[in-house]
Image (tube, rainbow, N blue to C red; front, side):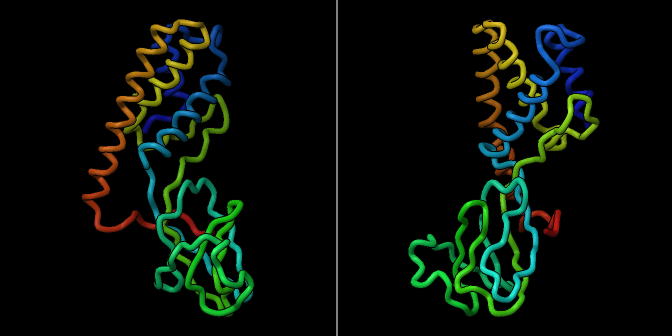
Length: 202
């Protein structure tokens, strides 16, 4: 699996600039992180389920880091319906939860649980951003979308030097690649019966 430092070297080779000159290291890192977030959102690349425990008399629970969307929520293996919080008859009623909503990056349960239980959250997530310009962190998506990320980075690099012809060429390749990535992810999803194994407990 390619790490970021190797990926960055490959990008610089393709830009014909082996060391930072026109394009700063921070710029390449920023564009790489922008691309990975965009791909995660538009190609829906990462789906998983994760667990947390509800607490008696606690209504709100922080979303797991990097959550893009909650697809489904189970309370002790019972699926809850998502209902906008404004439609709840009483926000503070206690009992066994039957509905949920997300407000300000927090999950709200209604009624408020009176006992502890297991919450299973099926979600789409984004990769953790690469932190530093010399990181040896593995590239996200197990290298499957590295070429796509490169096209985005090179497009932004060309825009910075006002080479709009090259920018358009790389962005067209990127947009075409997004469509292909989305289809690839859906094909893989159809080949699996369930979401991936839990990757974290929070």
